[in-house]
Length: 218
Image: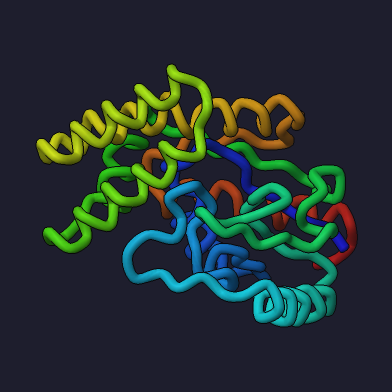
């Protein structure tokens, strides 16, 4: 089966692009199946992550569904997905080498930070407390003094409702290293600079159709 993988930093719009591509192509939405976003803050607020057993059953069903088409589009999540608790992803989708085509999504830094704010900014005091508690739990998981200090700075910014500055620190200190580690593993077949989700999805749709023709799938 041909797998088209979306790669890129957290907040660059991969999930939104994937939703748009669902209109035209078979997609396996790992985040939707897991009921979590693919980051350390993935299980915030209303999201109730599935158990490993539930996840395995649903994702294997999705894999069988897309096999009938001979290809699928997936947002690469790594070997595990989730926040405090992790779900193991099946080898077919966990191993980077199984991705036939690798599509790298990039975006302007300002757009990335604004998107992170829109995802994680609490809507009320209850959500704000949940967010702060999340970072207190994260703080306990780190041993390096530098990382503990970074978490403390993020908590202080959240307490002062300075979410844009908090998001910048989250991206720089918590997300960027993970992103760079994954990007170093791939040689992109297509790079898309995402400033408009529909336009980016159209570029990727055209690339997919071109490759499917080469493989005599369409």
